[in-house]
Length: 235
Image (cartoon, rainbow, N blue to C red; front, side):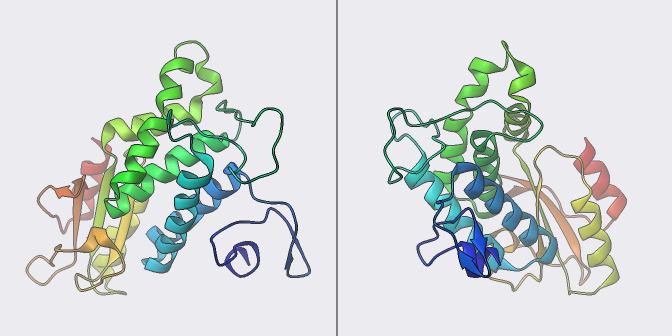
């Protein structure tokens, strides 16, 4: 429904729909960020690259339509939205992340999955607000602090390679998804897959499924042991 109804052929989102028809309300920053984050989660769980592609379309719009090119700050409305006296922007988090923090997190996760430098740079620039708000009002920038922690950690990238349905592939994939490393991203598939960049040049180990833990596409030695993978993601 999100892709078929709410996203048009320019990767622009509508906030609402009724009876299968998109409404007139244009998507705002939190819509693009949260939907992109959902697509990234689907890519990690299913191993289907189409979700990574959809996330990229939306995050390109975040960079082009919602980002101040000079400061890297984020606005709640698109550059081509209805003009107001003051273009709204609010980085503060509550029980749910602000569009600003959600966008920074999605941009960082996408960069970790693909190696896309423009998206990582956009995430880093957006996180500049954490330096200002974190010391003064940490309760109101909690989600932003979590994204900043992920950035400082890497974030870690886990590539699980192996035949679909193989018990060890499943075990390694489940362990990776349950890992506690801040902001870690996961890709699963065969070494021959060209859908997920993180899987490139990650061979099986002696014919067995394996997991690679990486930062910025530079990986530690692979493991075929789910317990060792769990340890690597908790240290």
